[in-house]
Image (cartoon, rainbow over all chains, first blue to last red; front, side, top):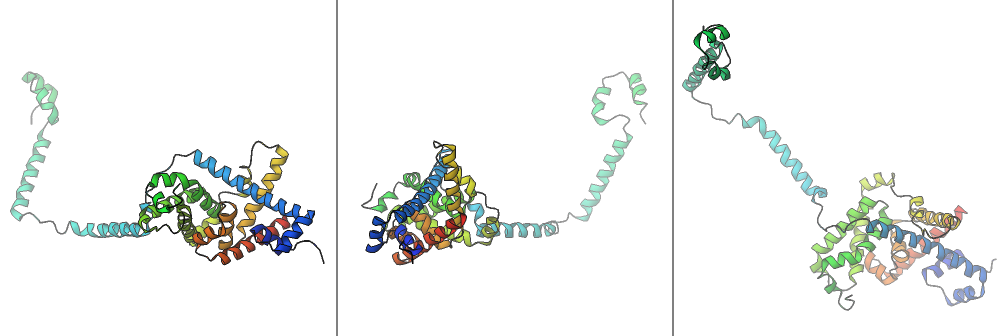
Length: 149
Length: 178
């Protein structure tokens, strides 16, 4: 059987709860003392690397404002999805509730529309050009426009 | 510092964030191993602390109280399915952490240091959630057993048991790499 500390005894020493005998052994045994120092050194190197890395990361960024991240709250996200679904579902019915104009008005509107169409078809030149054409003498107007129908 | 009355520390919340953000972020980062998630969880931690600052009675230090919130948030995240999925694509690896080591040392020493850091980083990943938490709080954040007990909700005896198992597990893992 070895006279050195067992793994459990090492772990107790590292955690900081060695017994009197374990402390005594560490003081007398150079090999166990060196092993304990080696492990503590490894943990210390790890600790320092993490500290350096995180400090560098923080130094490269401005301090953020502390505020709730509402977009990640599932409760609000589902409420938004439900509201959107309701709005989309109501769109087809939105037109159905519109009040229809009286039949006489529809006929009047149709007559008015036909008159406008006839007027546009009877033009020999586009409507925006009419003020320009009006400035020309009558004979030139007939030549350019090809005559008034 | 208002060590006599930790409640007073919460009066100036901006100062509290400035003072403890690094420590909370560091603990969260080594726990979740993802920068973006660590920063989100840290922000959540301070937001929760701000929201519930009136509930803080000062029975522990402000840092321990913040760490308690952080431990709970980390636990919630690490148990979520989404985290389990993304954990497979770990963004920060052992070799990245090794690169953070002291740049003033020689390349040979640095290679040895990188190897040690990488080994501990990987070894802590094999620990249980509680073992990893108490290990980080003890050996990275330098909290004592009483503070770890307050931050984790465990008894001091339970903290010692988890610490003991964590150290034994890491030693076993490091021994395998030789």
